[in-house]
Amino acid sequence: EDKVVQSPLSLVVHEGDTVTLNCSYEVTNFRSLLWYKQEKKAPTFLFMLTSSGIEKKSGRLSSILDKKELFSILNITATQTGDSAVYLCAVEARDDKIIFGKGTRLHILP
Amino acid sequence: DAGVIQSPRHEVTEMGQEVTLRCKPISGHNSLFWYRQTMMRGLELLIYFNNNVPIDDSGMPEDRFSAKMPNASFSTLKIQPSEPRDSAVYFCASRYPGDSPLHFGNGTRLTVT
Image (cartoon, rainbow over all chains, first blue to last red; front, side, top):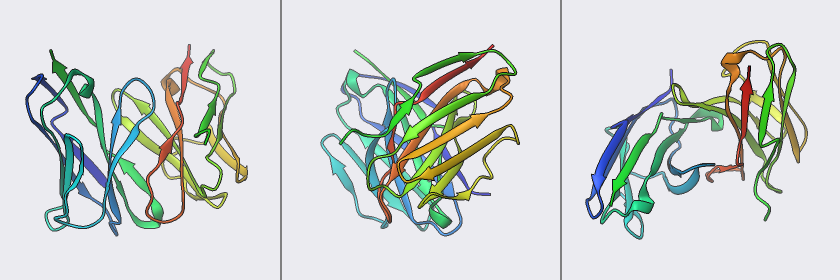
């Protein structure tokens, strides 16, 4: 059965800290891995990763994929209170199926 | 670009009633996904369509749930009869063909009393 597991489930840090969020997966015919940020409403897209070892970066956020070990990490440096959200990892598998992990709830203390 | 449009935003209904959720995908997107989100189970895939054809409905919890996509610009998710355990936020998402990200609607918050 295809699955996506995220850790930790929740995390509380102080503003300015660096955080690393983890995502491991087991899927048939892996195609891509996606990261989303969810605040109060709909998840919003952050990154799509298809190749191992190539870091994707957007401001203070970055992500990398390891297709051999079947995991990805999302790093956020110099965290701000606006980074507080649920971060979701998703994997696209066979037949274009996209399944999500349960998310990591991140809370940044001022 | 108007984004994915879902209606209604909120739905409160009594157990046993029929509920219909609606979704208009982004124009040009050929894949449409329905998800259900709860605190306990996270974001669960219910069903998805490619070019208006249902590809995988194995996530639909039971026969009370059904989904249709009569054309490229409209989809419905129906629950009949509804039960309190169906209470959740239901998201619709769409995307272009190939390796492209999902774009989500703002969801429908369903409460069944």
